[in-house]
Length: 167
Image 1 (cartoon, rainbow, N blue to C red):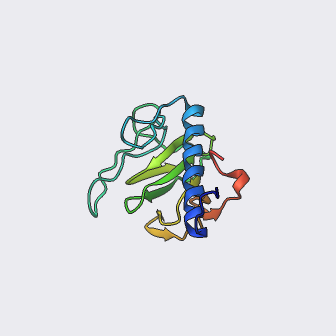
Image 2: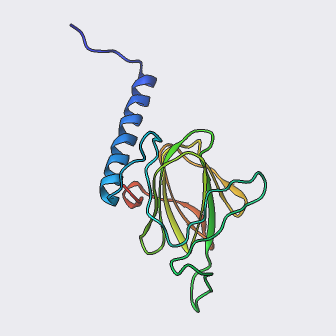
Image 3: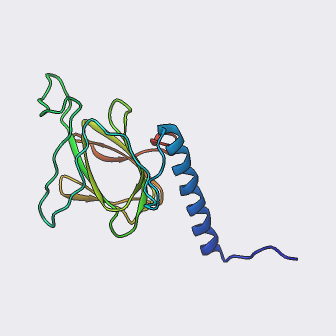
């Protein structure tokens, strides 16, 4: 009896799905979170500087959440914050985001859009079909998966696989 034969494209899709599933399983175990029942979306910890998902078309109704619960004021000598919007509405993707202190701001499946703000962000983005914008400008993604380091001063820079969060 011969094994199941897949064409190369189907095999690649199967391996990618398995890899994403394993990554979600590992992240869920690392964060001590369980995936939401029936939603296919992993829960994430409440981050220090993450905004709520964008709900309006053309306008942002995002409210920045801070660790203190109040508005954050610039600290002397602090780095200017970069604001990044990640939109996976077209196709859900795995996403992992860390801030400059290495805190995980989001880890799981993103099926919609989310905005992040920090002095430096490191991202591991599963699919190149995901739209990433910094200051209103779209960042081209090199492949699937893609790693980015984002700062206000340097914009979006590629991030080597071994330096990506949740990797």
